[in-house]
Image (cartoon, rainbow, N blue to C red):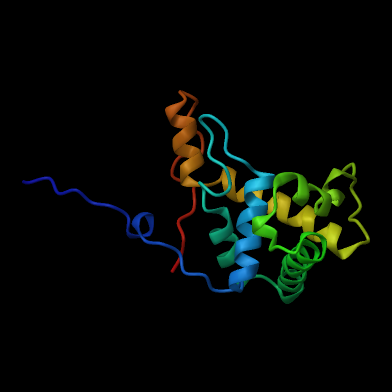
Length: 159
C-alpha cells in the first residue's frame, strides 16, 4: 500500500474574515502583537492567528459581546487618529501604550465601569486564551521538550 501525504484542510487554508471590518481587524492584529508578543520558542498572537480565531468566535457570540468588541476596536482607531494622526496598527509601542493605559490598572474581580476598559480586559483574556490553545503554541511546547498536554485539542480556523 503506498503512503500518501495528507494534511488537514483547515491547517493549510487561510481563514476568511467574517465579522470585523478591515480597520477593526488590523487594530485587533496589532493589539495582539502588543498584548501577546512572540518570544524565543513561543509564538505570539500573530503567529497563532488569534485575531482570525476571535473574528470567527465573535461572529457566533451574543450581541452584547459583539458590540463591546466593535466599539472597543473603533475607539482604538479613533484615539490613535486623534493622538497621532495615524491608524492604531501604525503606532509605535510607546504611542499605543498611552491608549492602552487602562490595561495597567490592577486586576479586580469586579469589571471596570468604563466600557473601553471592559473591552481591553476582555480582549486581553481572549487573545491569551486563543494563543495558548492554538496548534502553533502546542507544537512549540512539544518542540521545547515540554509535555504534550493538550495535543490534539487546539482549534483550526473554520471557513
